Length: 253
Image (cartoon, rainbow, N blue to C red; front, side, top):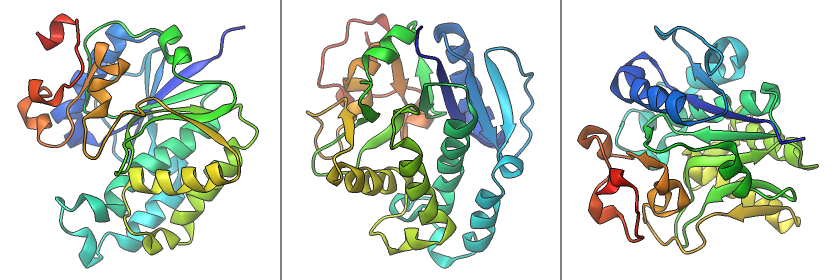
């Protein structure tokens, strides 16, 4: 039997209008699996078999509690300060916690809401990017934190829910703030590295990635998707200068 696959993302109403609608339209056109869309606000679109909306604060009240505890901290007021984005990225991480626990998928794929799928991306491609003995597949970068705009979680791994519990506890007891950085990618890496030291395997899709490389589009994912990270959201597309691998898709030409 083929592994069941679900995707998950999160966004609020403003982000839906800015990037999310385009992301979901391209997802519906080009992906095979369904996607769960988490939001703390009601977004104006109709659920269907491919795309369904979930109330994040209702399903994960601990997310709401974390936001309420910390939203007024002085170090959370600068929207440009990525490294201290504990509250900003809590919506994403709690969406992942809920989806991997409740979506009926053997593999649950996180995909950022500022992506655009330009070429059909089927489930066989997803399966090719994960190994049964790996807890997750991620986009790694040497000398920097991982690019977590795309991560595949293997919910059937025997240590998977231990991993999720360890990750979630950082938010529940606020020990997240003891880390050097507080955004989702850095925090994911800290938990991942701790489990790797225990012998748990993870698959690095981009072992050649360095520093701040835009590894998402330079990996095999770039043959199917674009990730408009940072200022690229306003530009509507990643830059040709971001590419250091050759892509044959018409999208990049």
